[in-house]
Image (tube, rainbow, N blue to C red):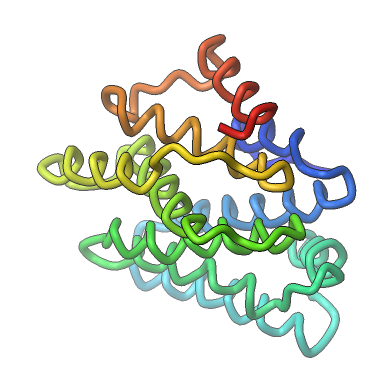
Length: 217
């Protein structure tokens, strides 16, 4: 199993059931790959074309074997057998496409990407999604992009406050503890200072992640 590049998502995977861990890792790596498409292309048109390629390639997995692309092969091998369709996973593209626009629409990105990612993750983990799962996903996605430096300076405080409201404390069922870890870290970032100043890997963050993974809050 190849873990996500993000060390905090790699840590969160530890709390996934062993038989679902590989599928969740593939989903999160796919999300990272779509983000890398934006980072590697400067022209909005090129970004849109490359994102559309991924969307179409994921949708095509429902009708035939994957092409010679290792990540798509991993989606076919690990995600589709658990009941998700390629078209379901392709929903992630909409959120990243919102950042390919000029100006980037961070709010639409968070709604489309974060809500889809948390919902798909819950389905892979075999757990019915709680009513407020989508809110947590949206809040997490907002903080993730604010930490990356996205968002106009004049809007960052408002977006951070919105994320804090969406990430209100909740208790996560055991099967969804990987998402609980991500939400707990994002909630702390939303209520602290500038999310871009977070120190991934610091002892305090690791402790916070472990508590969330063990206790679900």
